[in-house]
Length: 405
Length: 210
Ligand code: HEM
Ligand code: SF4
Ligand code: SF4
Image (spheres, each protein chain N blue to C red):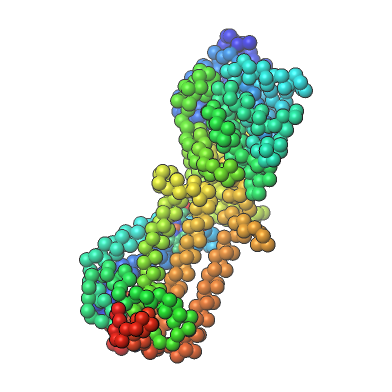
């Protein structure tokens, strides 16, 4: 099924109404996502034109809302991204595959048996109730993942849920959701996992990884890891009580949203939206005061943007809710407040740090005033109290005079 | 406890200056910190952050200098005395402070009438003044975990990962500001509860008798 000639490739584009120019533009866009210079675009284009043999892939869903699949399918017209993704022969893709029932399940087994495939995993790994919180065809989701992961060349963990459990992992996490890397650490599967953040993940990042894998690294797992600038981030998985190290493409998580934000000028000038629907909002001021988590969130959203680079959260007027970060719901809720609330549990519920601070400050001030009144009542103000002749300790231990000073 | 003189020997000029620098930095850091935490008026963010980023270096250099100077400068060994010794000895607990911790607590809780024998400072004050050293350094550590140019250094990134990410670090930094605010309230209260002479010497370097 390899696409042999240039001609065939451009025919394919033409059928989909994509011009050569659109194609080159998209290639430079992918280059940017990979952190490559604009000059890498022709190389990517050439590689794509040359075509390559189809890469078998499995797209497995764990505890997910299928939002990442949605995000991938979010194309208004068939475009280059779709064509790149067609380089993958997705033998199993729950949401959109034609096969069903036993045939579909058999496709997984066949792919695993043949080897040399890429595993794309969407959603959280559901470890709760001994893995029974997610069953597919009577089989535990955890077993399916472990089995598929063992034979894969590499794994793309797409979306926050696959990265660290995402919102499913949020307190109190009754389903026992964890990320792919954390789960695989636990069952000692060493297949490399590359994490793509956000809720949902950006289709462009998946495309960039496919390009990187098939065209830049020539379908070689070792070369892929070597040629992709990767960054490790550590976190503590509370469910498994284990430290986990996640690999991300550096360019995607290397800088904060705040650093690349087009509203940053308003931030520095101290021009803020205080209320939605206000004049300030109409002027496009900075969303810091209405809870923007851009300063704490390390993703490339302002550069890649969403929906084929049409727009992104802050651009469309919504504060970043930090979905690209780790344990992102617990760390960022409530979304329209500057700091997250602290989960105190019990009748206290979730409390804003500012409220706690105000109580502590208030109690301290009140205590000092009360103490001051006490000091006055005790007649100590002015010259102070009469001094003791000797320390109480020395008196007790029988010293006659002086003692230990 | 305070029916005594306040001489310059207790606070030589160099420490009057470091105390001023510390106070000014603290005010700048707390004010700009409050503003960064939640901008309560418009048009100041650039300045607030600039202020924070300058004062944070100054306060750390100032503290470090103050500690080093404690080994060279001589200060009064006792309240209301001109007799001096190397400052660090008077900063750390002295002979007079031994066995006096609970007595001091009792005194402040009105469980005893007489004042407690103490040296340059009472036990509680000593603990508080010494605690400000690690507290300020920890404050700086949490701050540098948030500071763009240093946040991804392993030394700081490790700590950020340990507390659960940059948001948790911000909240810790924010709470620590309140630790400083409460400390300052208690410190200013206890120092000046009997009369304002301690302020005269530490701010204006003005001696008072009796
Ligand atoms: C000692 C060294 C210090 C360093 C290195 C430091 C550094 C920082 C940095 C980098 C930020 C984030 C600014 C931004 O991202 O725009 C920050 C915020 C802040 N700082 Fe400091 N700071 C220090 C001391 C202090 C002190 C002494 C106080 C208060 C007494 C303070 C109070 C605050 C507050 C309240 C915030 C805002 C936190 C938030 O709600 O986001 N800082 N500091
Ligand atoms: S909108 Fe958010 S990311 Fe953009 S400058 Fe303001 S705080 Fe930063
Ligand atoms: S801008 Fe923030 S909320 Fe929007 S996708 Fe990126 S990380 Fe998520």
